[in-house]
Image (cartoon, rainbow, N blue to C red; front, side, top):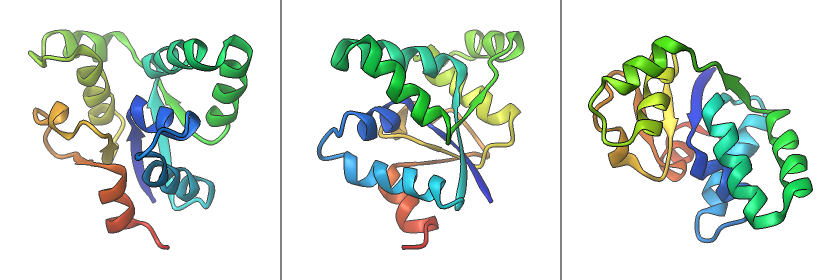
Length: 140
């Protein structure tokens, strides 16, 4: 079973039903529910997702939505090795670097994101949009 990291935007696309991205992102969540893939987010993504949801749908609804999504998506630990590797990596975006190093240290097969170019520094891990991943790996 493929192991993937979902970038923050993929989670938000589903929860907030953001068009035109919702349909592709929802295919990924359905595949998780159907046990076709194992999905994770990084620990720092949890706080980012909550912060954005809280501003969009309120504190209580944000907590409910986050609890629901975390019932099917795992959380990868973000330890000091990952943080320091990300800090010294030279990547432009620190959050992306944390996700990239989390993927490397946790044997992740693919990072699913809308921002493919943000992960150009990473080797040996596939980077795909939700649409690409769904078309290439998911049974419909």
